[in-house]
Amino acid sequence: MRQRKRHIAAALFAVLAIAGTLLGTGSVQAFNDNNGAQDEKEMIRTGLDVATSIGLQLNMTGRDPDMVGLGSYLVNVSGDCNGCHSVPQTAFAPGGNPYFLPGANPPFFSGRKQVNPATYLGGNQDFGVFPSPGGTVHIVSRNLTPDKTGRAEGGNTLGEFMLIMRTGIDLDHAHPNCPTNAPNCLFPPFNGDLLQVMPWPSFQNMTDRQLTAIYEYLGTIPCLEGGPGEPPNRCK
Image (cartoon, rainbow, N blue to C red):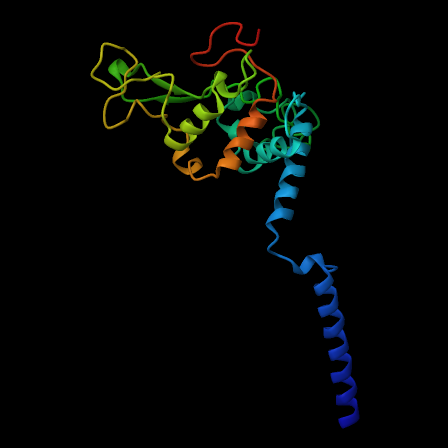
């Protein structure tokens, strides 16, 4: 019995020694659960894959692919920006809406999720009436696609984009504070100087690198016409 116990102890020691050697050389990756650099690489890869699956023709001229991929991950995976910045009824392509019952023909779900590139991040989702004179003010999501300047989110510079994301300021002044002569003002306690509905109080905690990545990605996606406050022929 003693001899058997010695053999078991020796075998266990050998296994632990081999495991220690493998861990020391980095051969056992599954044991490493705190590798930030590897996590970001996976985010970048996933982000680029998701953009490809949507069917987008990204303009990568002068862009850092890693920043674009990271931005896509933050926009499409963790942020779901398209969930607000597109009209729900057309956000998914026919047959690609995973919220629908499965079926062979659209609009039933085909089993393969498919975002609609024709409306992707083009804005125009109506979040309803806000307290305003005559109940005339509707908060409608903005068009985030780049305009003819190639700049994201309606032609904003990176500095302006980061200011919006950090403070929530509405640089378009679409809904000023009442009292004012403008019919589209907001009654208190709502602050018309700030974007309503948009979760900038959460997004403001992102790092500069993450916000820059989002801006870089948004600058690569195809331009779409329309959106509240956007001029005609914004893409030309």
